[in-house]
Image (cartoon, helix red, strand yellow):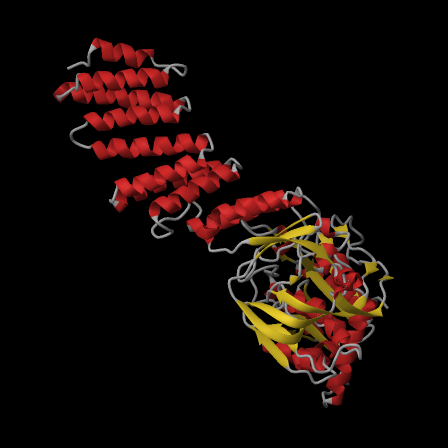
Amino acid sequence: MRPTATFLDLVRSIDSGNAAAQLERLAALLTAEPPSGPQAATTLRHLEALGFRLEGGGQFGDAARAYELATAIDPHDPSRWRQVADVARLRDFIGHERWDDASAFVVELRRRDKNSAVLQEVARRLLQLGWEHECRGRAEPAVQCYRLAYDLNGGDAGLATVDGDSLSRKIRNLRILQMNALAEADRHEEAVVLHESTRSIVGLGPVGIYEIVSARQDAAEGHGRYHEMRPGRRIADPAVTFLDGPIPLTSQPGTPDAPPQYVAFFQNCLTFPRSNVVLRGEHLIYDLAAHPLSGVADIKDGVNPGQIMTAVWGPGRALVEAPSEICEIDAGLMLFGLQSRQYGHWLLEFVPRMLCFNDPACPSGLPICVDDGMPETHRQIIALMDSRDRPIVTLPPVATRFRELGLAPVPAFFPFDTRPGLPIYDAIWPQDILAAVRDRILARLAADGVDLRRTGRRIILSRRGFTQRQLVNEAEIVETLQPHGFEVVQPELLTFAEQVQMYHAADIIVGSASSALINCIFCRPGARVVALAHESPEFYFRGFTSFVESSGARLLFVRGTTLQAEGVHPMHANYRVPPATMRRALEAVTVTP
């Protein structure tokens, strides 16, 4: 049976300008003359079509009202219409950014509907809507969709976003992106408000705003003691050499201005193991973030998995989350920080600080504080570098307050990564600092009875145990080189002393341009190093040259053919080097004086 002519006329008359009023007339009509039987089924189809039409025009509130009318007249499955109406109502609130109304509606839904399956289905619809907003770059509506789904579901359980994240993790990640954008625009106060609105969901504490300063600046303002052992100075640009002649490098050249080497002391500092951030009062002490070139750096404290703090950065100021738990330590020297457990970062960024901690200006009684989970090799290096027999304190991943904290610098301006859209920054490492590290370690090993007299070894550094920046035809290259007296070595299987012995004894070293080549700082002057790499002109060619040649060795790059793989950053792509190319490289380093 067809609905009444009055009903059909009302449905046909509804447009964007009169929908709300006409829907109320429909409601009055259906209340006065409730349809039943076949007429009810036909009426429901008309209401469904009306709701669909209104949603297509972006009138979600009016569509919700149409579905609510269907709920009242369907005797068989009113919950279906209620669910569709609820989603449309939430979409209306979201579309008009009426976040408080949406939250109140979610509270009402949870009070009204005890059926968790119904609530979870509405939450799933919100997840899909959140993903659509996210893909369109609309962060705030996406966050609100995920937040409402979280509230409706009563937590993360049983739900995941389209890309597999939990709701709380997704909200956290989007909030960090938003806060970063606000901080970069110097709108830190707005970022604080934004964080406060969802921090309870992601289990974070409140954030404070801190002025970013270098250790030297903070000490100059009377807040610490600063002793400079080596002033800032100009260092030489490295001469990068390729087997097939020069190429135009597309990375940003590192600054030739090496920072001063110092030891500085500050009282009542809050630190975060696995991070470089130091908070003192309303200041954040961080040389990298305070450097004039910090604008090129994508500073990653608090973003990488396993870190224990959240921080975002803007011009001159940062937002840092207050920790929920704090350990207390009387005094110590900071040899912990971002990526301290990774060998390449450890040897270049952290080990040189021991030169400063050995200085007479640094009190003898202070322990060296390191991150947990470091390889035994790291401790072996500390023992060789330390001239004061200091104890080592291992910090758990908990925010730590020091009554007194000693700091020393990274020997170069070294951003962990550049900001999106900017070329890779190719840091230049000061050879005077690395040479001092080399001399200290070689002298200590010799004093400990390690034989450093052997020469003439030819070494192939194997990268079989790694998945990134891998020489995929390593076996072919080994087969090419072994008849010429080369032996294959996996450095990570040796003690640190054995590694130094091996590099120091080598006349020629061949290996992928990776952290294993950093040990070439222990080569003898005149040794030849062949660094195999993919073909990207954006690689760290200057950086590798500067630290390898700090020993007096000479470095030759051989570029192979890049093997691109989905999801792999071009800087970490695997590659292949033809055996004929390897033979030409061997000839170059054995013939050229």
